[in-house]
Amino acid sequence: MSVAITDTDFENVVIKSALPVLVDFWAPWCGPCRGIGPIVEELASEYAGRLQVCKMNVDESSKVPAMFGIRAIPTLILFKDGEVVDQITGAVAKSTLAAMIEKAL
Amino acid sequence: MLYDAAVIGAGPAGITAALYLVRAGAGTALIENSAPGGQILSTAEIENYPGFPHAVKGWELADLFDAHLAEYPVERLRGGVLSVRPAEGRLFHLDLEEGKGLDAKAVIVCSGAQHRKLGIPGEEEFSGRGVSYCAVCDGNFYRGRDVAVVGGGNSALEEALYLSRIVRKVYLIHRRDTFRGAQIFQDKLRAAENVEIVTECVPEEIRGGAAGMESVAVRSRRDGEIRVIAAEGIFIYVGMDPANGFLPEEVRRDPAGFVITDAEMNASIPGLFAAGDIRSKHCRQVCTAVGDGATAAAAALSYLEHWNA
Image (cartoon, rainbow over all chains, first blue to last red; front, side, top):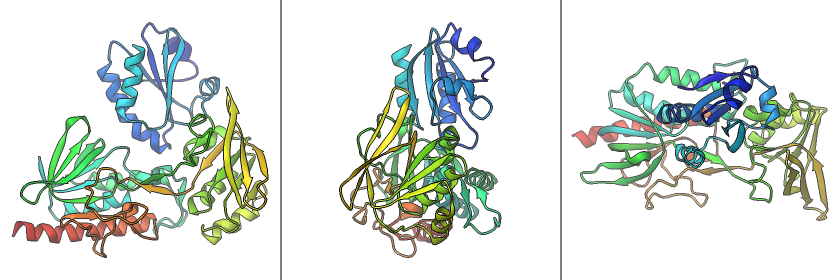
């Protein structure tokens, strides 16, 4: 299961996480975000215990997206020890996302 | 698993086809590799679909289509279709991602089309950091900034208008001096104070730095002069390519790759039908996709009757 996060808890949940974290920046009115949403959920269960998966609604939080220079959604950023290790923009295939995760774990 | 009919793609054509098939009692699988709705999901507002006098948001219409189909026992499968091929006993075999597959007596292809890229330097590099193909998705990130829109058809004009209500300034870049898009959009754009129309110019390079895109260089087709337009975003609407990579080679297509059908949506292989934007035709709208979907389903049902006879 993914965890919904906001500007307020980003630091605690993502930056200070012991596990690598995949953050899906999305919005409800974004078609491609809806496309990739179920894939992100599948990956959350498949990598449970090895990867934390979070979703940030960019309508509700704008500080963190601005901090990471996000200008398009969906953008998925992979954090490890509080640092950005990789990112992907657009509704990519599940295998592409899985490859990004595998490389970082 | 064997189905009476497999519908590939859950845009307006595919959802309508599935709806008509299942209501007629056909065992139907609907395969979608993204979210139901297709291109309407990346359209801000739809103003020309009857029944919505005050326009409807693309994603709201997609939800309504999806909710309508959810009333019926259609098998919904998610994932890409890798290939469709004629198999033993007049069946079609569909190879799906992750090693899955299914068989069907009839196949309706509603896979639609995807945005064509410009193919210029900087387009890949600044993808997601300035380059976008979905104004409704990404427009909000450019509030108070300057952006460019490339293209001259309905999509380009509609999205330029949509963006003009959000951003500081829109540069509409088009290679010709006339637009293919509807007059009503052209009039609205000419009336918009923050839209500059840059005609007879072709984008050559998208430039920027670590923070993302900063400008687009365009070359004039009149005198070859290069102009650098400062813009932090560029929205590209230069046409569509058919999503046809999974079809058998023998399926007849037009030179652009769209599937040729007759008026009943029969493709060149018996039992294979095409509907919506994937079909070779002039008018690509939600209305025509829905019409194609219903026509294709009726033709498929008649084909199935003979199949079973």
